[in-house]
Length: 482
Image (cartoon, rainbow, N blue to C red):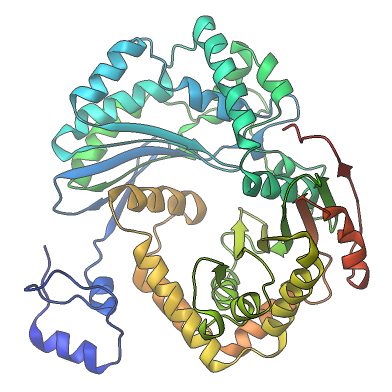
């Protein structure tokens, strides 16, 4: 627990920092500036094999510990696309030491929660548990990652589970739309692969395919053992030496994977189904990579555009121009600005859901919002966006699991954990001129990629006829198969 004196508190308040966080009645209020000052340090160490250990120590009874690995669907080929996601399903089906029942019993006896996720460039295995059970949690995670049994019977059983999940994903039209966006924007490159992979691959992936994937990518220099909560960094380093020193850092022959550049292609893809009442549409230009200095100005720009849902209310009083128009003109049911950043590229876009008769209007005003970012951004726009962005950054780190995830991703992306105070300084340095210049660089006179799912979406090629765009138009009348 940390405390700030009344004098410091008054000085910070006088400096004009907004009050964003409040505790219960009877407790002292915690301002945004104080939350920055009180953020614990993230300590970082490295084992001799290259595996990194990072910990944020706080006085909590619980902790989250996990292994973040620099691999995902971008490292897969067309032949084995989906292998990483399949492995995620196999992770908790037993190890060489613990069969599935024993593994589940060990986790449940601690009252812990074991989970995993796979993305285009990252894989994570993590556990939320009591701080006192950290040694056992690290031991089980080490087994899951290094000695998963991968029995043929379990593979066949999980094959059916993966296929059912692929079918279920088709019901999430936002996920389908954004997967289509990647498929067309990065067509012919690994970033065009979906994380889940096609159902054809899920039916034929073998144990050898999964073992080869592990041997190719689960290397110590590409791993981060991260933890947050009631932990001790030195204890974590000792546990890492005990359980992860044997992780290989060597590759066979010339098998070191090198990420090739994934070119962006302005294009359009549509999955048309006129039986659907609404159209789900994404429009995006190529964005910045994770380490680009343009990341923060683009975050502010996205905050200016904001988001909208018809259930929000507010109407003409909403702060976002596009949200006000959406409410007043009934342009859409919802929209959200997004920026998906990868190691060397990204997608800067807007996703919206609208009626088939409003596609043209919403597309027009979405592009108009982009042009406003390049030409007419004001001081008040930027000030509002900065405050919203700062509040979002603090709010996203509420709990040991999101903090641990933040640590793992930052170490892989930047080689260090970027503290909130540094994010705050970068955000504060953004001016309207910077927003206009950076947005002009990424948006003005660029060829967008567009994906659409639903009713009458095949009309997009007509809508975009005044936009500089290379159209690769694919219309699918039947349900889409991943």
